[in-house]
Image (cartoon, rainbow, N blue to C red):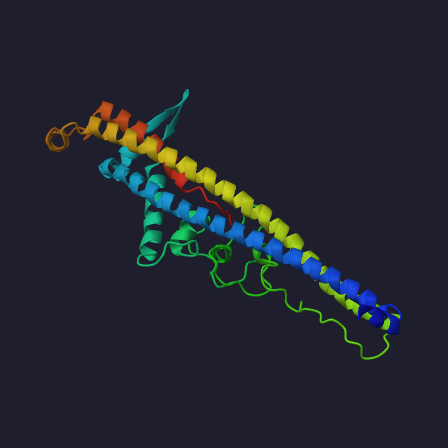
Length: 306
């Protein structure tokens, strides 16, 4: 059949058939690449879900610091220092409490629904600005570690408007790239007609190549996001262990016998008009406050920076 088509079209049909083969090979390559990207997307989504869970656990641990900080008065907060080498730095309890309160707002906003990447909790845990960018919008772009809630929605499998750029580009079914039917012999085709048809096919192939370039870029970005997520998870787990162990030790040192210790401190403050905490207590509070401050900063570390 091909021989006859080539014979009656003086080789024009054969040229078109060859170009159609090239197109189909390229389209198969695109589909394979897209599947690879989609698989990585699922892996990244799993990693981001884990980041959220680890951050929730970390905030719950960090919240224990309020058992001590709630008793501190304004002036006492201002003069609690921790030692950093040969320098002294004020322990910022307000920053610690801000980390806790912001997380609690996000957790309360997400109660009763999945704590996925596209939720308020996901926004708090993964991007730098809480409550921005609707998850229904198209993705404006992804540069380095930059992302919006729309990116998070896409990572979670949410729909993204056709034409969305950045990480979503090239992920939708390529509009207009329909299968090219084999040419039937309807008459004698000239090479001029074949050139026109080949040019149309090449335009479609160019669209696929552009999409593939974007997918390659997306895969690199997904790998970076995955690596950043894994590093953050490891760091948070280690910091959580350190803070939890040290807080238990320090708290036990300040309140050796909880009821008796609290009564003694209350009496010292309200009867004898002295500080609620002793000098040794303040040293311990400065120590655990410094650890809590570093822990809070790590919790505030984002996978994406807007």
